[in-house]
Length: 192
Image (cartoon, rainbow, N blue to C red):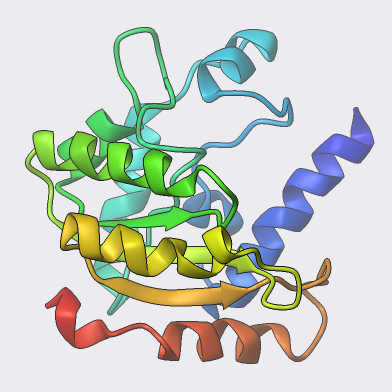
């Protein structure tokens, strides 16, 4: 639908705003679908297979003009891009370091530790864990301690805990500041 397509462009613009990037949206997000499902399903629904060459070309182009490149995952390392190729395979192909972004909810310790095991088995470097959308005003004991437990059990550093924010608009002037504030909390020295 037109509203879904507009939402997709809106999300790409939001990403470009947060990245403070002048690159074309088609380079920042070289693959995208309107259908809210795993890329394997979205590609079939929209009759548009993922163009891996376009993804690799965009990655190389961004690397040439950027000091830092963040490749956003889409739901987890085992999300299928095709029947034979998942997000973990793409991370291996691009030789990416991995930052695992976890939700703060009950169950995240198990999910995150399994993700860490999966990434380690692929012999990729795990840079750290970020707990995303943490609401300190409503956090249970399990939620409040999950990040530290994950770090202690895995030996992977907890880089940051990003607070829950209400829905935000890319046009809001505080968005880059909010993103930079969260990034500033990361222990970047551990990532080198």
